[in-house]
Image 1: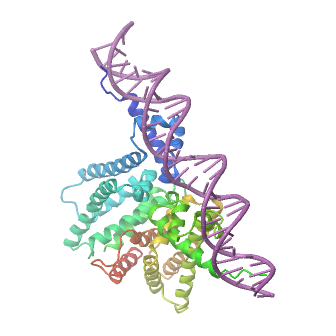
Image 2 (image 1 turned 90 degrees about the vertical axis):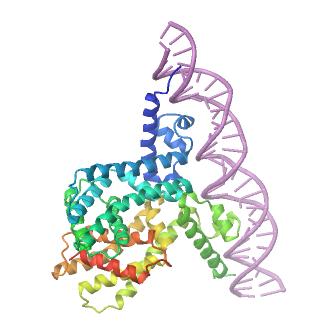
Image 3 (image 1 turned 45 degrees about the vertical axis):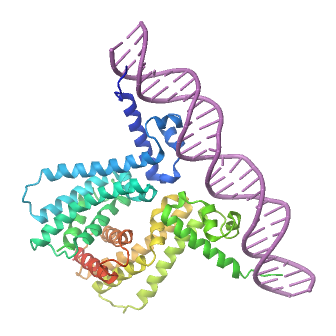
Length: 198
Length: 198
DNA sequence: AAATTAAATGAACGATCATTCATTTTTTAG
DNA sequence: CTAAAAAATGAATGATCGTTCATTTAATTT
């Protein structure tokens, strides 16, 4: 009896994810066919169904995988911070982390907030919960800062969404190799973030 | 000989636009069929082609129409300002205008920056030029403010994109009837915008 | 009114879609 | 090496897609 080791299978599944990620980001979920994905992977369309039950499941896998990785990466980042880190330093940490992480995965980021409407209700709810959990990270930093008198933030939830929109929007236009380095960008955005809450 | 008056025709075309706008915003361009649009309008699919040569032209019409209306609305707003308006006041004017205008047309806004990738290159270039023209409005205000020593903005183009992303992101979550009025929101965002450039 | 044009119908075109499945090939376990 | 399971093939399913077109109906002009 052969136990499921998944060695070859998981490798193919990963190639499917990579192909789908790139295609979905460039053309959009609805505009991409399973045949295009299969062609990019170098396989027949039917083979995709050995790894993902439906096209919708493939999208959900990409989106929830991205959000889970984002939350895990933040946990790791937060673990390096002192327990009593000042809100201003925490805000800087979050801002730099968010920019770096999102600029390194523009395709997944793009998909994860662009294809929400193509998710079936059940899948949508799951992704929304993850998104909310990530927003909570920033909201709590803002609340701590407001309580400490360091930030002037009357509506932490609103400010959270405003800041995340600003930071995430970066991915729609910034491309490496231009006049400004990623570090330059980090500095500019950090100044704006800091200024907007003080 | 009957000259083209377009009375009835333009009325139907407008109903097509309205149906397509709503459907595209809710499901995405690629996920909406001409048959769905025709059903919403109450007409047979073939009739749509009396008003728009292709589905792509319908999308382009919606997007460029939105951008042209936005630019025209700003021109009207700018015409009410004194010629020597202080940069800070100009920034407030732009911020309030942007929020009000965009919150009143969330569907068109959503489509116009979500469906860019579904535009053929020629159409894409046209929309991009309009978008650039709108960005220029804010960039010039920031440049004036920086020159006058009122703003601390080292990269007006970058700050422009950051601010517009922040302001436009509002449309993805704000819905009237909640705890915060549109005026409340305007105040919060204006404080953030002002703080981020000073 | 008649004449002319615009608009809508109803049916059809070929193409492509996501998905299924019996079969074959490849990988893995014992 | 052999047996079992996983993975891939190749072909097919019915459905739906954007678009076309001959024809009919409605609107508009003279």
